[in-house]
Each structure stands twice: as structure tokens, then as C-alpha cells.
Image (cartoon, rainbow, N blue to C red; front, top):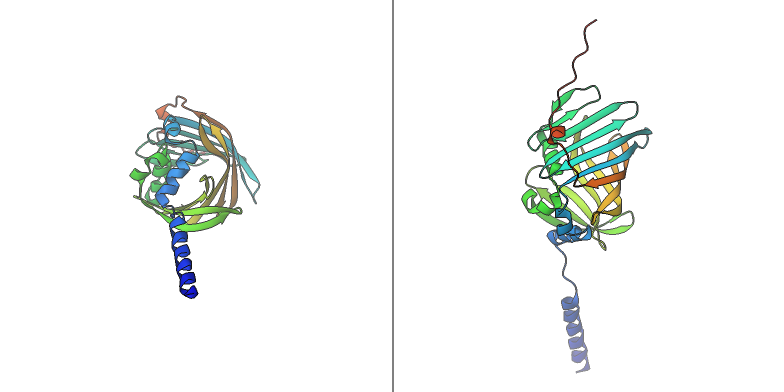
Length: 248
């Protein structure tokens, strides 16, 4: 009799434990919590344009430079990179077409898989429009980023290759993102670590980023963020190529 009573108590305790256990979050719920963690949808929706300026350094090579990013709703973006000893490079998206300009002044159209990435990056407040951009978000489990527990979420876009994001299991702030990129030597996984979140106009922004590239590690430190400033649409338009040097 005592044995049956004990068994009954154990079964009841096990059932209670299962009921009391918090349900596992879904990928979509984690993503929504990350939006709230950065200030919420309402605060982010108030931002219609931004200008970001900062410094960058390519680790092993010791190369330094500056970075400027101009973004404007609904989907315009221009990135200007100036590297000491190399010159200026830029990449833009005017809402329909993507282009890139090298230090020599050569301009080319961006197509293929890289175009999908640029189009997605150009969507202003893309996180708020995730249902338009992604087919699904799947929780892959938990991982570690710099010693922090993180939810690992796989995002499958409607166009382009999937990406994986790591969200802090406590704060739900983004800690790292992995995506497939293309370089001179072919495809590679671009890993971006983000930290040092600061509030700008009610929205938390990561001021420190580190990217792992085939040629080494690149660090970026944001110095200035200005929101809702006028930006001329002309800067996003593909520029004319530099004239060829005159023959001697």
C-alpha cells in the first residue's frame, strides 16, 4: 500500500513539474521580444532616416579607416568606406538597383546573391517588416556568445540564403548574426558580433561591431548616429564611372 501511495505521489509530482515548466519560446516570439528589447515597435517606427558614422580597423593588416551609412525609408541605403592608403569605396541601393564603386572610380551593378543581401539590408526598420521579408523563423536551440546564453534562431528569407541570429537569453538583444556572403574567393560565412548598446532617440543601437572576414577580423566603432535628418535621394543613385586616364 505504501509503495502504491509513493508511486502515486511521484507520478503526481512529475505531472505537476511538466505543467509548471514554462513553454519553449518560438523563433517568432524571440524575434518580437528582440524588437521590444531595443525600444519597441512604436519608437522604432518614428525613425524614418539615419546617418551613422564611425571608425573601422582590419585586425592583422592594421588598416584603419572610416565608415558612413546613409539610410532612408522605405528602402534606400548608401555605405561609404574610406581606408587609409587605399581610398574610398561605396555601395548603394536606390530602391531598385544596387551598385558598387571601387577606389579607382570603377562602377559596377551588383547582381545575384549579393543583391538579395543588399536589398534586405536596405529595407528601413526591416525588423518591423519581418513578415514581408522572411518565410519562417525557427528556434535552433541555445548556444553561447562571449560566455552568454543565447537563443539561436534561423531566419529563412523569401529571397536569398538563410541567416542565423543569436539573441541574448536574458535581454533578447542581438549578440551575433551569421550569413552567407560572396567574395573574390567564393562563398564564406560572415559572422558579425554586436555589443555596446546605447539608446538613441528611444531606440537601442549597437555601437560596437566585429566581423570575421576571410582576410581577417574587422572591428567597427560607431561614433555618431543622427536620426530623421533630411537625406537627398540623389546620393543613392548609381554614379557615373570615373573617366579613363588620357593616353600619353
